Length: 389
Ligand SMILES: [Zn+2]
Image 1 (cartoon, rainbow, N blue to C red):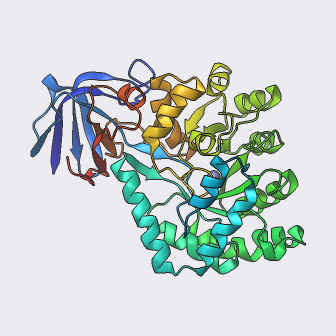
Image 2: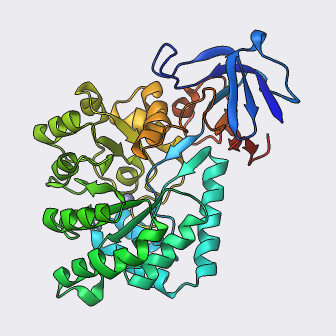
């Protein structure tokens, strides 16, 4: 069945064949056939369809592609957040609190928890979400975390190398052997990606390299958490290994920026983290001006960024990271898809997935111009409305 969405005031297509970064079509229409986009163009030229949706002059965008989240967890860390806002600095070890709660939760509890967060994301316009493991940190708990995540997305990431769990605190090398051995064997069938937290207090460059290399040998594509809390070797490791994306990129020197530009590895910036930890924001302007590809994502997790809102991240990217509204929207849609090695989402053109968002606003600029306002009036995933229009 074909559905015509017409009277679109501003249609963001991200189609590289159309002019401008966002490939905007004004006074537009779009036809959805089944799960795909069948036609895009001026409303006056639109073909007939079985059903008609009137956008009433509002904006339509590709659904947000949130390429970095940690939704499989139990409990929350509101008390830690309050302590941090009272002056206690953030440290990677807080992850262990969530590990204990996650191990104690049943599969059903974890599934319900992910469902609730994915529902939040849908209502805020996210149509593709990547979900990591990393709060189980045993063979069984990592495998079941990924099996839970797989019910919601194909973009699942094995993050056994999130932090060294307490029981291995005296022997991190033995934990890396576990991650690259039996844990990877159990996780790989449920994962598309492998990731590591390359940071002081988590894993060093050699350990991260061992994890990514072992994952690659099992067919998993690599991504990396790096340079979040301070300068370090992670970004250059990601570039050297030719990873699709390296995430955080807050503390970069000129060699890091050059390595990203030369490798084409996407820098995924996660401004919810800096907002929630009162850390300095990454310098998106510097990266864009150097020719680095930049994505933004929520990093939704209970410790350092407990927001599921890509619109909030867009607003922060514009206000705090030097991006224009168009660059931030592009980074949360088209570049987010690139950061997941996907070309079927993040763009609205014939043959692409009909994942789209209707805004209660005339243009994409309002996402940054009206921060904190629930502007998403409707979300379609694979051609099907998942929120009321
Ligand atoms: Zn993360």
